[in-house]
Length: 130
Image (cartoon, rainbow, N blue to C red):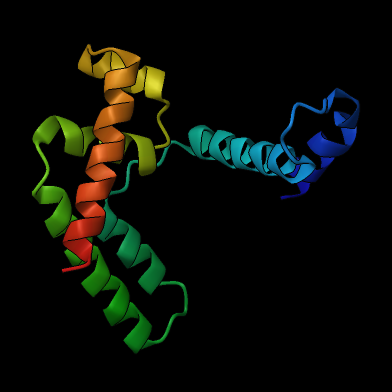
């Protein structure tokens, strides 16, 4: 968070009024900083391993059980996606890969990756709401 504030402070002169609010500009910088941080780490964990990590951080037994249950639900819903879409979702949201990287991995156009991710997230939301 501090890195985002420093970037905003150093680049305040670059803000230009284009019809968007200053808050949108600030949020974009913060979001991009967070994504950059994720890409630097390149985690290779899957959803279940992430739940185990959360469980080992001093969370109560009930919270741990809920986290594992949610991880199982998410894994089940991910299993309903086609293999390439599932891989794209994992790559984008668990591994921090960019759309361009995913397009190169799956040898599809960039906009196809965007469509895959958007539609996959809609299917995941529908699955998780059942």
